[in-house]
Length: 195
Image 1 (cartoon, one colour):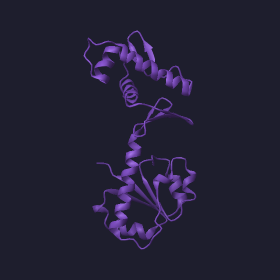
Image 2 (cartoon, rainbow, N blue to C red):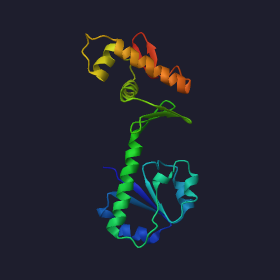
Image 3 (spheres, one colour):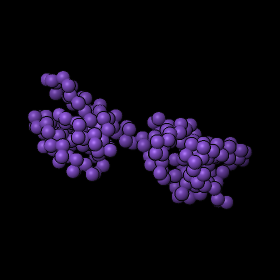
C-alpha cells in the first residue's frame, strides 16, 4: 500500500514527535525547513497529500494547493492521539476527493458530486450519464447500441434500442448546450465513442 505524504513545513517540533513514531503511522512524513523549499519541491503530484505549516500565506500561491490540502492547528497543546486522528481524517477526505475526479479530454468528471466541468462551466449529470461517459472512455473501441444496452443497462439483446439512443442524444445535447462541444461523444457506423 502506498502511503500518502504529510509535508511538515517550518514545524520542527511536530516533525520530531512524528519521526519518533513513524513506523506506526499510516502516512509518510516529509520535512521542509521553509516554504520556499517546499514550493520548489512541489512540482510533483501534491493533490493527494496533506501540508502542515505554521504559516500558509505563500503556499496558496501554488494553484495545486487548496485549503483542503492544508491543516491548521490553532489550539495548543493537543494530545498526540487527537493530532493523529485529525491528520488521518484529513488524509481520508483528500484521498476521497483525489480519487473521485477523472480527467476526460479537457473535462473533469467528479463522480462524488456528479459534476462535469471545463474551465469555469459546470454541468450536473445523472448517474446513468456518468456510467455512459465512463464506459465510453474506458475502452478505445466503438460501442454499438447492443453493447451499451447490455453493459450499461443490463438489458437483454432483444429489447428496443430507443432507451440507449435517447440517453446518448440527451447527454450530447446537454454537453453541446453547456460547453458548445458537439464532438465529445462521437458516433460512427460501428457505434459511439469518446476520442
